[in-house]
Image 1 (cartoon, rainbow, N blue to C red):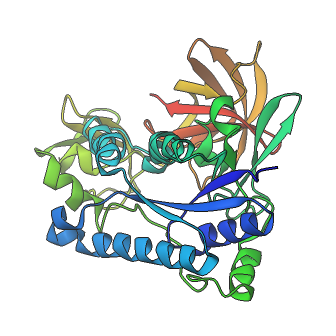
Image 2: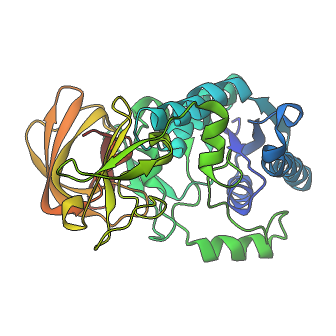
Length: 354
């Protein structure tokens, strides 16, 4: 009987390296696939560090495949990445919203274009180094949190549905990050001591400098909740809801951005107390099971990747959902992802609206 073939998305880092090794030991026929997202020749001087890092990642992934004795495939997704991630990123800021490029990348690139390419190579599955889990029961794929609470990445995966989950493997979901690093050392895998990536992969330094390359911005007013002019900003695209630093205004108490209006070219600021919201609407909602709840339900909600999960009532609507917090929450940010949980399971998620 032929072994099942799995394509492992390799970044050159420790997580994907261990994922490939574990699957090989489990008896799968493993092939390595690495995405080219940046053209070194087209990189501007400010992007050179990113471009060099990408090239190193490709070399490290190829070295890993050589050490494991598995095929290596380099897949060019530069155009897709520019369209679905970079263009989306700058367009959302121009609209006064705060995007989540990692969610967009997972939806359209890793589990969109790359998954399609993996299946075209004859793979039964695509595997990644994400810290999340998939469980199968009653013909349904359930997306669960990874067991490491500090590394759980299920928040970034809420756009996955049944059609994709059945072709995915997350070998690291049952491991702690410390265990993964120890496995990499024991197996003497390339990249065992490589630090993890923490920032946005396509921006070198200040995101404002990145946006200035693509956007024409004008200064405008910073106003209080009552409409009093307090100062001047250098462009609404360089700000996000909840921001305190970099406003350049003096006040008797700390002020935060509470509203961004690109059409009026205006920022509204308020006090800490004025930052809190009782709830919001989520648009572009995806339900992992494929079906929304039939009635309002209690859920755990995360409104940012690193925020704590809080209790809320979810009222499903066609293609959207109304979220009412049990206790008002600070800095609910339009454009960011919201993810709905019940215990450790991801029910779905969407995009925060005003």
